[in-house]
Image (cartoon, rainbow, N blue to C red; front, side):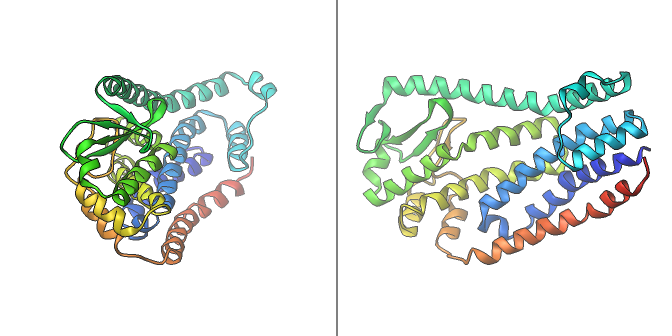
Length: 303
């Protein structure tokens, strides 16, 4: 086997298997959800790149493979002149790599398009049956069940049921609205679509299985943390309690939902952010160091 394939193979094992297994079991992930989400996103991007690079390295000659390894390790893109001068084997490697990358990319685009169609249809219904409240900066829907949710993307809007307006105190309602606006401003629907795309393309991969279970909860916790900049812990926790049984349409983020109890306990149990961040960084550093022997071995071979 071409020894330059060791680095992408190591990255596949690291980001597709080892790091997801570690992060899914780490207590710090739910304490610092944004760091954990960054790890999941980085794992997905690196895994996609490594899976495209691995077959390309196996096709290339030793000299061309070494040049490709140098470009990847130094994060240097090939020049247009270099791309135009590719020989037949290098063109085949490029075609294989792009084909592999196109699978998760196409699945991601399909998920985004499908979710957008659902949101556009729901937004059209809301324009007919809902009414915009300028004080809340949200669409109010006549429904006795308390519910607060948002439609992200181009059809972005926050929706509040009349039951939530009557049930929640002003502070609780403001906390729920802040939570939903955090989803919109954070563009959380993009990470949801990426997670679903990985689950469709690599259904048995630990990165897809663990990420599919962890990412939605971490997004809710990240939105909670953003909302806590504008409201008290008690207001947000009691709002979650009141909205726990609320429902939301597909492709929307709801303030309540099945994770409300876990999130309430987290909100009402303050912690020091320094130690979870340190533990998270140590986990990432330890996993990254596992790649060092492969990189050194790869670079030590002559051309």
